Structure formats: C-alpha cells, structure tokens
Amino acid sequence: MTVSRLQRLRPLIAEKGLDGLLVSQPKNCCYLSGFTGSSGWLLISDSYALLATDFRYTEQAKKETQDFEIIQIKGEPHNWLLDLISNLGWHKLGFEAEHLSFAAHHQLAETIKGKQLNLELIPTTNLAEHLRSIKEPEELELIMKAVELTDAAFEQAKAIIRPGVTEKEIAWEIEKFLRRNGSEGVPFEIIIASGPNSALPHSKPTERIICSGEPVLIDMGARVGSYCSDFSRTLCLGKPDKTLPEIYNIVLEAQLLAIDRIESGMTAAEADKLARSVIEQAGYGDNFGHGLGHGVGLTIHELPTLSATSSDLLGDGMVFTIEPGIYLTGYGGVRIEDMVTLEKGRAKVLTRSGKDSFQL
Ligand code: ZN
Figure 1 (cartoon, rainbow, N blue to C red):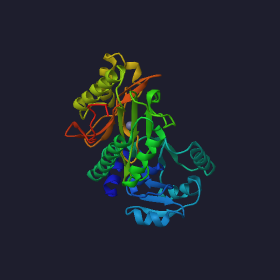
Figure 2 (cartoon, rainbow, N blue to C red):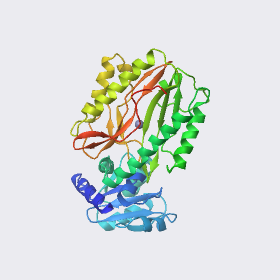
Figure 3 (cartoon, rainbow, N blue to C red):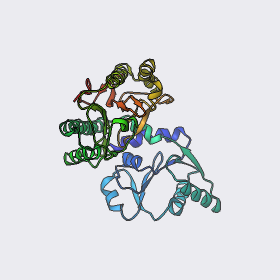
Figure 4 (tube, rainbow, N blue to C red):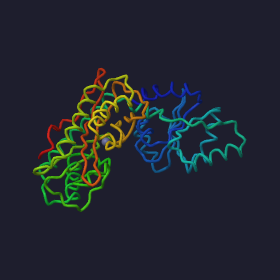
C-alpha cells in the first residue's frame, strides 16, 4: 500500500525539480510510511526512502514500515540531516513550508552556510496533502466506520437531550458513547451550542441549560483506524419560533442543492457558490461566514477546501463535508453537515442521519 503512495509522490517531487523531499508533518509521515509515532522525518527521492526517528520510536518504526530504511537520530535536523544529504549528493531539498518550523529552517540554513554546502532548501506546499485528498478504498472503508459511529451517536444524543440539561452534560454523554463504541478519542471537542451560543460556528459547550423552542447545534466527529468523520445537525426541543423554520429550510435547501449539483472537475469555489447563492438569494449571505466544507481523512480538516476563494479541483475519490449554515448573532444558528465522497463524478452522501426536520 505504502509503495503505491510513494510511487504517486515521486513524480511530484521530480516535477518541482527537487532531488528529494523532507517530510515532517506527522500525518503525511504516517500516510506515506505507515509510521504512527509523533516524532519522525521522511527523506524521499526517486530511489530512496528513509525514516529518521529518535530512540523512543525506532522499534515501533521497524514494525510499522516496510519500504523505508530506518535510522536513529538525535535532535533537530541540522544535527543529522546535512551529512546524510551530502552523501546522497543532493543539491535541491524540498521541505514542507507549512510545517517545518522557522527555527528548524533557520538552523538548517545557518549550518549549510557555515559548512559551505552546495544545498538549496526549497519550500513546497501540499505535495503529500494532495495525494491524501484522493482516498483509496481501504481509507474510505475506515471513514465509513467513523461516519456510522457519528450517526449512531446522533441517535443517542436525540435520546438523552431534553430541556433542563446543560450543553456540557450532553457533550460528555456523546463523547462517552463515541469512545465506548470504538472511537479513538474524538478528533475535536464536541460542540453542543444552544440558543444564542449556536450563532458561534465553533462554540465550546458551556454550563448553559438547554431550553425548549431554541436551536441546539450539535457538531461532532469520530475516529476509526486513524480516519475521521465530521457531522452536524441542528435540533429544536418543543415548539420553535418563526425564525428557526425559516433559516433551517434555507440551509437545508442550500445543502441539498450543493449535494445534487456538485461534480468532479468543478473547482471547490464553484461548489461553494452553489450553496452560497441559495443563502444569498434568501437574504442571509452575510450570515454564512465560513466555507461550504472541507476534506476529511487522517485529519478533520484537509484538502479539498470548499470556500469562495478555493482553487482546489474536485475529483473522484475525494471525501469532504457539505455544511452550509446561517448564524444570527444574539439569536442562534443552523448548520447541517453531511460527509460525501465523489464517485463517478457525483456526490454520494455517506452520512445516514435524517435532516428533513429539526424538530425532536
Ligand atoms: Zn466540518
């Protein structure tokens, strides 16, 4: 499995005119090598694949990886990387600009200067992330398990939520349910946001007591076999006021339209526009302040980024969320989030939970 990932990465390294790539982002390391430790570096070229880690992880690395030579290192890259690269005869080394720290880069650059090495450090972005955005069947299977778990947790949430309980109590009950049923922790803090709190897209659960007649926004994720799911629904206990059905139906219409019309080959900005136009035409454009969705996989937010300014190209095998929302400060908000995968050019919805009604 990892061999094919390396084979897909290698042409990208060559395209950039690099002799090799230094991979430091832990999820990229894991994706490419299978190594799940929190501290490791990969050095990859056309014919070379090395995993460098410290003594805490060398045994684990040997068990988890097959196609990588493993070396034990000490400290930051400037201590061990440059001799290795000199021996390989490389002159252009790519690094992950969004992950290598400024301090590590600075130390490397200073050491290269001090030793008068003929080596250029070249920033790259999203090389491994781009590969990660297209899921293999085995990855999709794990994502589906995580999706099934959040669907089940939503059923549990509906069974226990009632006026008088606090946001924190519900969040904790959902977390326990997820973990008890096989989730590896939770990929992000569960959001239970009631009343005006639901107007904050990323509100944290508080001691606020949930009341009837107000929106309650639930946003949660599970992780199975390292792969995440992401899920949101908005509920109402008892009889709602006039605003909630109005904004709920607009968000639902926007979400259904996006699911129906999104196609492989579209840019992520075009996808975002599908839902955004519905919300804008209803007069709530300013109240949908985030993007339509995001890729999900080893991390809860990854490529593609579905936003008004994204140039990411959507393609078969991608897995992402479709989650439009309307947020009214002081009142509350509505978000409906499903996970989809692009299959034969169209969006196939992975999330099973119903969304026709917010009414519990
Ligand atoms: Zn999300």
